[in-house]
Amino acid sequence: LSAVVKTHKNELVRAKICQALAMGSFACGQDASDAWLVLSLIEGVMSAPTATAQLLVPALAAWALLVSSMPDSFVFERVRRLLAVLDTEGASLLEHENVDVRVAAGDAASGVYEACWRYSPAEARKVLQDMCDDDEEEHHSHEHQPAAAHHAERQEEMSDFEKFAAKVE
Image (cartoon, rainbow, N blue to C red; front, side):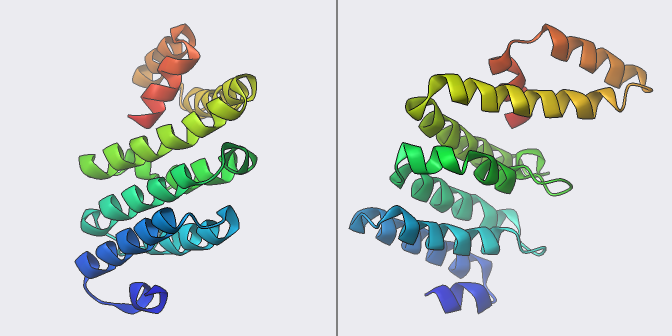
């Protein structure tokens, strides 16, 4: 199936293959390193420049299922890389034009964060703070615009959770 998911022309078929691979890995209780290979395959499918919402939404659900099947410590060690998949510069799934993609990406991000929280609440807070700080730096670089300046001021008043929720939205 991994060869077909890379080459099939129909996005709906590719989406169903992603789901089947994730369900198979989840049901079989694959070792985290083996599940990581499937996760990487699905990431490749999601990152294709031609991927539409029809493919991205089920692929994100499959990706999130795989993340949820991995030990919290395994996810924690890779948290920044996992979140980067969802929020890459210039191609953020959390800021996708399609609302269903944004919702699926937000669900996936919350699953990653939850695993980190279960592993180490203090470290999860630090990751969240780092993400919010990065976001604030980006907003501060656009302060020459009145709307951006107002948004940056509002960012300073927000709690860490509100900043994370705003980033996910």
